[in-house]
Image 1 (spheres, rainbow, N blue to C red):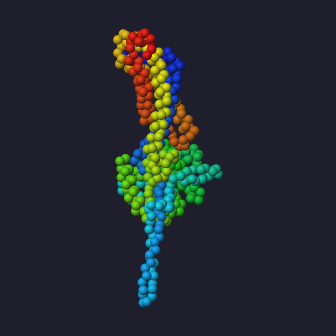
Image 2 (cartoon, one colour):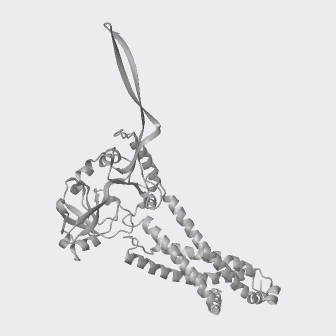
Image 3 (cartoon, rainbow, N blue to C red):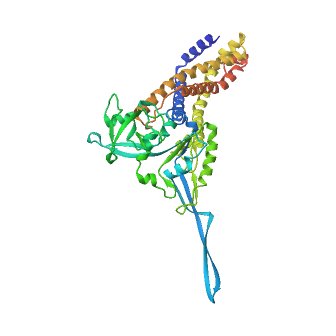
Length: 446
């Protein structure tokens, strides 16, 4: 039966080449855009190396310090001592929490991490790092600009980078300030030139001296600042003023926490709330709060929201709403085209029903024909998507982010095709299946 459906579907598509071409273009273009959007979201927000546990990560890129209005009150107390009038003054300062006079948002200090976050018990792992340190080096007397992250040893346990050579530096390396670094392969090629092996080579960082390469990692699929750097060095090689800088407990470092399981993220947030309440007032700042963010919030931060707001879920809602609205336009057009197509075939359906075809048979036939059409358009859309992703990756229009159609993206694409096929075909198919035999044979119309 299905073999006959396929033959009828293919014959029908060949009869109206213009209709078939317009429909296939609409389906393939729509699917190409949808798959591209899904690929971006899946690569950026999915559980991919080096963030295979992205749904269990909680970032602390900044903290907020707030200072309230201070009201000074002076009380006078007079006493007579040995016939001499003495006046004592008592000055007290009261904090008016209803009026904020000073507020600052910045990364947290290294001291705050060590004193307040590192002792936490709810996270599985805790790491501190200085992100996005711009450095200039001069291999072969040519200026090369690189981005460095200065990280601790726990960093390598949270992020599972793909090591092409060697391994990450250890906790002993960090504590003892051993001159070792990990480089991305592209950065190593830019600095040393193409070589079969980079381990043991010396990387010169100006007055900081020489660092031995102990690991070469593959590029990251994500644009997250924590994993997009060119080189990674022990955090203890940060400038002393960065390590000791403690103006209002603010500084230049970020923290990332890994939960035992996804449901523990709320527990970690509650422990952070308790920890921030123990931070003492300093430099006219009275209250402090950690601005924790999920991987979605970090991505959304580049587009919408503030340091204190978490817009990850809202951004995802905006994107999904936009994709649904985008899909509605070709869906409505395809429904209209299908309606016109089945209108032209009303005579054929009348003859089939006159020879005993049931309403269900006609309905299944047209839905099956539409499925064949959308599958062909879907295959074309997948090919176009692969070409589009290849162009973006080759030209690095999204930075280092490498887009690909992995099994999850392909599965989502298949679901989109099936849904698109059903929604665009069910109404015309239902209308043609309900046609009266006499009217179809007489007028060949609905």
